[in-house]
Image 1 (cartoon, helix red, strand yellow):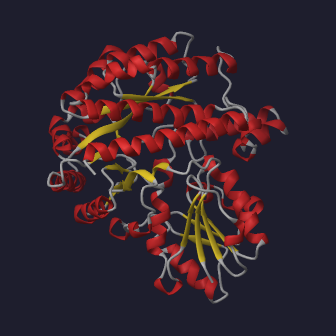
Image 2 (tube, rainbow, N blue to C red):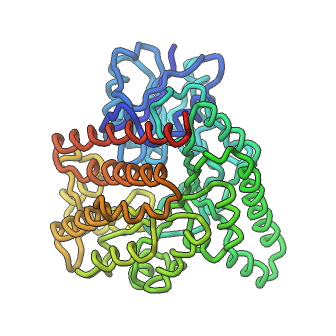
Image 3 (tube, rainbow, N blue to C red):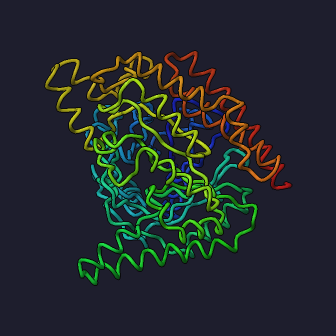
Length: 494
């Protein structure tokens, strides 16, 4: 019996940007008696049916965006006589869907580090359960990964997780509902050991793949102190101290290491934390700006963000402390008006953000926004509404590009406006102008290529409306990835 783990993808680039961490974590969680699992990341190459034999176990991890492809692989594996196991956030939210569309025999819900091994042992003795509840594991059970199984030279960015869960409750985000609002923080020694393992494989760029790298804000500490809740204050203080312990340990890493992560804008007020990040080589952060207006932020339960000129000044604080921002903006909020595109681009330009992503409002399963949207869709049209409420089951080329109708803009206007902002922000001249924040020519060249790769991968590939355009975009992403690999090696002197 061979064990397979598959990361589904609609596009195979030959190389990929970020390591799919879950693939190598579950490889590490595979009991030794089953040997090394066969790993397939379809971002590199498509799954080969002839690799699967009767009696094999095929584990498929899915999120909403790749669920349809995952179900195709599940059906194919089941037809070849394999025992099919689904896991991941989408399978956790919709386990019945994996059985109905993916020919699943078993579904692992929640964290898989422990439940995956139990499922394999039960399958081997012919006593597999239908559903395994992985739950939310304590931080000491959040394991590392089998980085020794990573193919050399195929990924740009390594991936380590330091904390799981987020205390916020944004309406468009599912993390706080699936992973919880209690931060589950790994010890810094285990994290640093993983980073060194990735470095030995040649990685110089590492994503700290946290739901929120800044789980305790200064406001949280002040509120706990003001309430007189001593136990809560001690808990939050311990989390904060462990964050600083990690950053302090990372200071001793070789200076050519570079990290990026995801963080809330509230970190801008915590200059001690920003300075510690800078010294720890955490130089880039994804900040969810979402909307440049107060009304927009209120609509998505993100009032803790700033807007207007205050927003511009707040974002500028990050680079002043050596931490550069990738701003994330959402178009299509019900409060958006026709001038939202120019207004957003103006804020992105004046805020000194290094990178930006401009997303259309999409109702993702597990979010508050999705629940409201799903009810409305089903109420308006029992047939078509029900189909659109499960839009991820519609083939990509047939799927509506805008799921949430806007009260004042047509879908065509929303798409055109989003496309125009991406194009203007990532024009070569604009990117080269922003690259001045980099210290030398090598870094500026890397910045230029990274910007083009980001736009190509996350915009052009995703926005393609037919298979031919998607294939061309994927091909260009592969070329840019390989070129960026070479520049990184040049920078590192390897």
